[in-house]
Length: 268
Image (cartoon, rainbow, N blue to C red):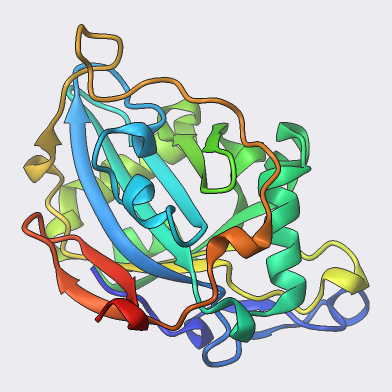
């Protein structure tokens, strides 16, 4: 996996509400940094993956606010592709977008979250059948798919997206799944700009998935089993932006599990 440049994606420009123009996102404009991706499976659909002991969200969110997106893929076993991002240096972050993230995790209702979180896909490498099936059209996740939310106060918010809840999305996934080991797909998650004050749009988080073999998902304990690895967590509570930390961040190599984490410069 990798993190694509934000200019890969065309998003709503500053005057979109009048001219309907989308423009490439500016270089370096992504708010959050991709820190880890987990590919896991269980007998039942995996919910609140961030609550698993030792998860990247629990480790990283002690110092930096984390966004988790859990793409729940249909099938047996149930596979989850779980992506983790952390807020970059807050003194360099887009203040308006940071404020919207705080609102999304803190004050927004689930209905409001469902109306603004948008996925923008882009197939960089793949056959024409997959390119046509996936397309590049943005989708508001909470309107198209069953989406639920979990969190830990001041530390992270997780978005669980049930792909099986849409026959169209499940059909696209069947096409993608058969060719996944040859695909390179870029994803951008955006809080949709619906007013002049919320424009231009900027990427909240981006990821590049490269030649993913879904058959290599790591089995984990199923939810609700005795001693299970995950538990249902509380709804997100208000968090103070200062809790995300302001120290410079750097890539700190790989853990024994291949998970790239961030560390403050002071700790190196």
